[in-house]
Image 1 (tube, helix red, strand yellow):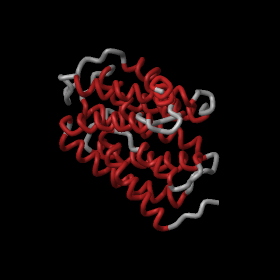
Image 2: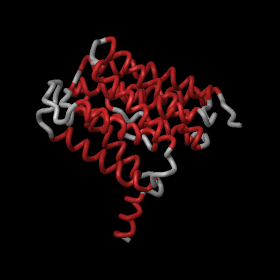
Image 3: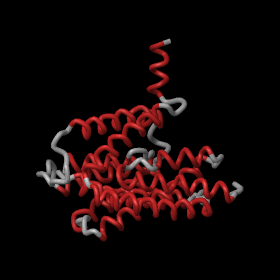
Image 4: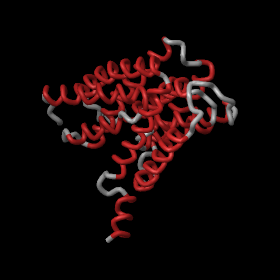
Length: 264
């Protein structure tokens, strides 16, 4: 049984507050909170389950802010959100089937490409553009596929949703951020439902982090609404680069191992 100390709870709450703020704008909060839980000595399964609990709180919090501002088109978003939830639950059930080394090698590369796209695409802003794929196709394929990834691994999922919404559905950055929070909240809930069946969630830590993440996400979402693309774009680029670096510097990452063999 993991013993919970007050100082540990307060420290993790502070981490969740900061992660919730950045996650509401650019995604990647899980790469702040999950390592913190692991460094606290929490069992990996319990850390993942507890992290999903607080992550769901953060994304739901951000979704509430965007919804109150009238920035979520529920008619088009709900089918995507439902299928993202189902995809995530399936991913959580299939967590042992996909080689982790494949994800650890591929995801950092994808995040760097996403950062490059947002950095060098000159016409990105809050303007809606023509969609490249029908909404039905996106809902049946892209939304559950990214949701599946969230259930099976997770880092960068908010950035993946955002890129897909901008490039495939033509959404402006602010619209994409608001929609991605709803989709991310749904995928978090799908995975959380599966992980909660294991009884691995450490409730005192999860509840405290969830409250802090909720507050942080409220602040982050309000900043995103106020400042729009001029805030979202640089933070998204920064978050993608930091996530990629964090994943590549994780001990045992295949990319670093391969580079070490080549150099030495």
